[in-house]
Amino acid sequence: MVTHTRWLGHYAPPLRTLVHELKYRNRTKLAPLLGDALTSLMMTDGLLKQADLLVPIPLHPARLRERGYNQSELLARRVSQLTGIPISGALRRVKNTKPQARIEDDDEARKKNVKGAFAARSDAALRDKQVILIDDVTTTGATLDAAAQVLKQAGVRAVYALVIAQVQKKQ
Image (cartoon, rainbow, N blue to C red; front, side):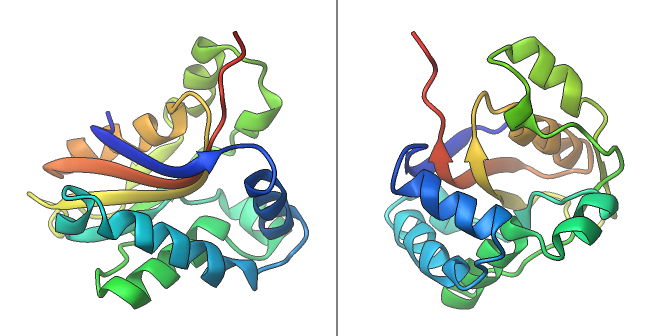
């Protein structure tokens, strides 16, 4: 599980608009702006500042071909550029999951959707590292936790997360 997550704000305008433009409308020029904001947030957090590696949440190859880029990777590149923390391609997506946004507010369904979705590429470079997962949006944390579980099994000491927006649960 991810032990510490920070986000810029709630998944509402203007962040929701920015995420949609980046993710679905090929507005990749927004990545540096959002990456700058993530870096600023990261630098105010004692745990995140100690990280050894940045790991963007990977897309399945089919979705990557469809979109042409991974928005989480673009964000991670900017954070890396500003902090000097290297990016690791430690994770790969091995299961082409249904987008979490299309699953109703059901924590169990979201967990089931991403179960087995990730695999670690190599555990030697990960052993005893502190890693920050980078993603655009988190709702229940199921994707982040599924990725963190794989990283922990590969020897990572601590997994944190840095995301643009947190979806507010409906009351």
